[in-house]
Image (cartoon, rainbow, N blue to C red; front, side, top):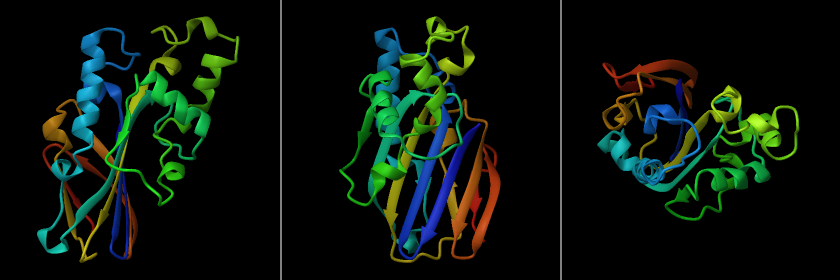
Length: 204
């Protein structure tokens, strides 16, 4: 399942979106054909357009400052500590598919392991292990063939009292059926699910 993590503090809003690649491009194996590589590039380009993917209240005057996107092979989709070696590997496997709208000096690199940090097991299997290494990258080894997209958006808003956020991801990628939402706001922490027929996150 795709996940969306939100964090609001003061005039800052952070949104992190993680989805299995199958939801976005229709396949999870490593891109082989030019068409598959192009599909990944196009998806990354669209994912960078955070201003088109989320509807924020006009009164909040939110401005997208940073958008970072990566594609890499994963086994799990909801861990969360960075690993620079794995980060580099994601860029290799994603065919150079790591991009951001601008460089970040706000610790974005550490926070944004691109979902690849969760792949400690499969990545070390790719490069160092010999227990099933021959199957790495093949459909028979399920844990090693899953890949995902990981995007992070940083907004600055004039008014942090955001009550709702519209999610337009379903419009661009109809394969996404629902998104698990976790939010941390000044009012507390909560979780929920956004669906195509109700694509609104209600923070209050």
